[in-house]
Image 1 (spheres, rainbow, N blue to C red):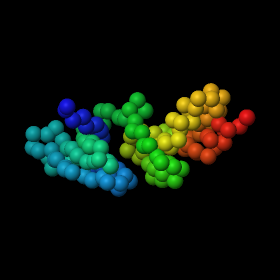
Image 2: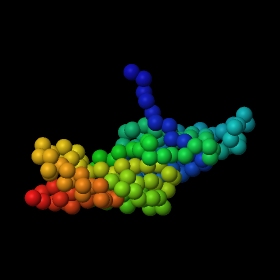
Image 3: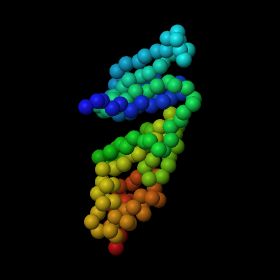
Image 4: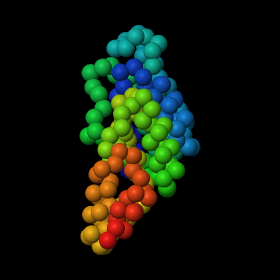
Length: 157
């Protein structure tokens, strides 16, 4: 089976972004950096690509220029064990970025993340449709997801 590696297109911040991401996630590292040569199209000696892993997931960042930007159409989901993890990743990734609703946050490089507690699928998939709908309604009113508030909303009778 061929390897599939997400390629992230940056204007000129690929190395800065990779350094940031590898500092945020455990078991992460930059594995290689390549540079533009005389043939271009970038300025010779500047960073072309950065290969890195985030907790074992390989990714490549490309300094491709300003032609393309990230959108919400592609995002990375962070499955968080508890509220403490939600708070850490939300606070870290939203710094200099933009908070959105339902656990979505854009980091300072423009990349979108979904910071999701592991309990969310259980709440939304509850066999009691009243509980799941109350949890959904609570989630839709949040930016950073609050597990306790969603659980409390689900339990309201």
